[in-house]
View 1 (cartoon, one colour):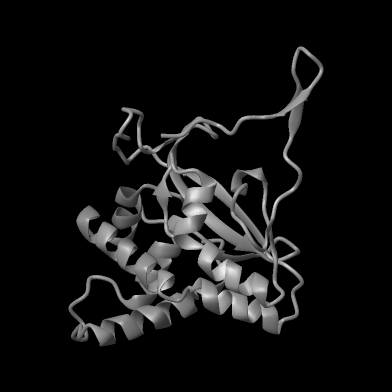
View 2: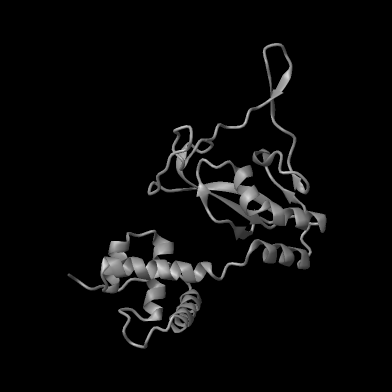
Length: 221
């Protein structure tokens, strides 16, 4: 094999930030100095390269000089360390209020994945989203008025409607924020969300006798 030099399109300070988090994590779990196959900086490069390139872990591990199993372990360790830095929804909403935001947007999306399986009570695939016609997981997210992402929920199966996922992860905190002057605009997928969740007028269509009826929601499990 031939060794060559490559450049990763990630700011150095981002690698150093993750490196410091990994150093603190290793200290916390009592990792002795020296026994790891990769130091914190090289592990951070492996993790950020995966985020940047979505490359196969086998290739990342090979380039780092470690086994595939070690590559997976280092990758998931790095992801967990980063995830631990995320603020919870209550902290995010408090910051929105301190910053004088007039509102925050709530929406959901499907993160594609074909590595999950399950069956609903009616026999449909648990991880298939009827709305997107694709397999994956439903996540809820909150955004600032300019669209900047502020918070992302834990994942629910792709068949979960947005309103159901929001009730699990977001609505209790959003109700409190709305009562304190921070409403949440959302789309018609959140009809029935109640106080503080502002939904646009439901879309309608004409039936054969000329009357308008609401467009039905997509089918779910």
